[in-house]
View (tube, helix red, strand yellow):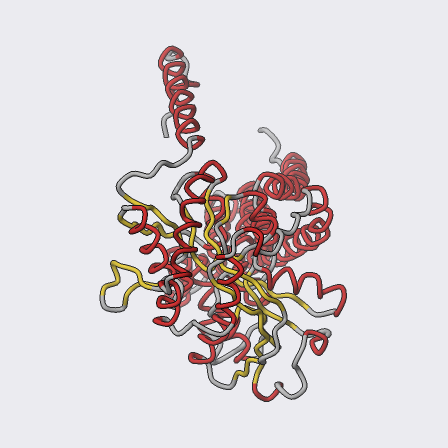
Length: 506
């Protein structure tokens, strides 16, 4: 990494480099700030991981995508005289990417919410869905509504209307809302017994019924919502053109044909289309989005609970990493050839594969053999991953102790255990303390990865908050403040320990 701006004797080059960086940043900011204009292509964003019937890779040609949202985008593009081009993006990042100008319109089963309407240019609704409850067949007679789920775990997608319903029900009904990043694992966890119910769109529930056995979706509607497209507010004029296209497609049956082709047309849609084609007077008045201050007060308790989960998980995982790291390092230094080979293989395998993959294997891959609770799987995944790195620190520290001291201790009649506990171990601990505390701070931040296992830690809760608020500014600032509140005292304590245990200068 070039550090010439701070290097002695080369200040001029550093100033030029800094000025160029500032100019490039300013130019990029101006580009992002401009409304996206229509060129030869209609660039639209969606989450291909959402799968059928929304957006998915074509099984016959993985280079292209198919789904009803793909057909809707193609319809809009053709009426605008453009070619559609798909831009993949994570579902929870669609709103932010639209604001950045990464694409013109987001289409991926995006729900119409007051916060979204306050932050973006939202199209007219083009599909009506129902929030429905799915349970195991054996539980269907006794679990039919949210009132039957007191003290139970209910899964859903984060940043959705269903999550908002469950969040409100946590206090009113005492149920536990479990957030997921995709619509597959809630239903697979329900089948495995990790959840007691799933609340999601009827489109997702019907897809899950074809994939998972032993599940039942109740016909009763918990709530009603609508799918919309989202654009940046600076592109409101383009949104109005798209609204006209969608209304015409409702009148001439084009949209009905798309949804029939994907098996989604039902008796709910004609009434919606009648309201939308009647114009603004025929539509329900938009709900007012809660203010930022109200949203912060609503989500702050959840953020504080998530921060506690992050801190507890990080402390326990680091304790496991230290204990396992000491064992691995000692085995590699004192063990026989087979022990050293086995421990070396563990270290290299762990360091050579992503921690995210290891978490998936522990929680989902081993589910048929052992169904670890999400928190336990997260603890084991982080702890065993960091144990490999800690072991290398401790091994290096053990081998850094001068051999002359070890030989002198043996000459004095100390056994190997005494040499380790009285001479080698204390010195190695002092040498390892600084990198060990650095790893603790790194683990505190890496704990955000465990959200894939439904552990709602600080970053995951912030992501949900931002998705529902329609902005990352306030949630991001609160998240950063909470991380700093946890990490700065730790860094200060580590510096004090290093100063106290620092070896005396000879």
